Length: 96
Length: 263
Image (cartoon, rainbow over all chains, first blue to last red; front, top):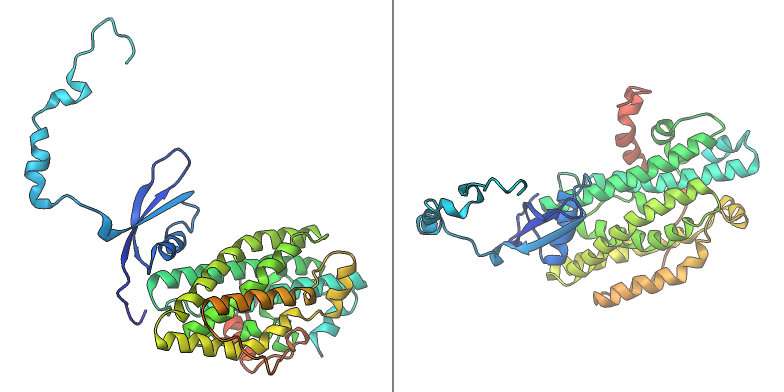
């Protein structure tokens, strides 16, 4: 591990079984998508963790910013009616 | 005393040939796997380190399967560990190309591309062997080799298309290794004997396709095809390079210090 060349960073998503969603498992450096996919296979699915892999350039991800958190997320804190648990179940309804 | 004679004694002809066949395939895999494992912790960057270690482990796993089968056929009743760790250099049957030192990263990848380009079609054919054990091991190994070949082939292209330095290194690696490749297509007398019953594969018949495939990759990488002015062989007869003894000394040191050790 002599020189850490400036290879682009990729985020790795692995779907562990059919029917499940791809989950973010980590990131790695690679020269391009094809190589990132192979390295993802070698770094993150060595113990049969996956049946499908996605990789995406980390720089392609548009992320929310910490300083926006107040305006982004706080307004939903006082809107309990957006949760199903806010509503009382009518007695007539047996199963929901 | 050469290994061939020692092992041959007491075997009916076919079992002896099958033993030698499985042993040689195991030796190829183990010695190359041992070389690849030398990159562990030393690869150019972390991701490639893990990827190379995975290929090494594929090779060592393959060797284990061939050795276990060979052990069942062995007239001397040795187990797989004893076959791997208690034979001397002259008793090893691996191809010379497998034992050469890892060199630089380009050398390792050029060797891998050459071996993988041979292994994939070879193992696919061997998967149709009339010997079910050999066929099963080959079928498993062929899947691994398909991946190995994708990797090594890509690295040849990357290094050739990289910097002037990487390009010079991959070219000189191919030039240095080319003469070791014809040995991959040499048939031992045992392999030839097993060919009739459909157990082994005709290596010699695969040479033209291999050369075509290699030259296609070299052309795609805009590298020069080596001229092939010299060739060398001898591994199948236990005649190895001067590097082989050092490899065995390191690989076998634990088992020789603590014979019978298991973990």
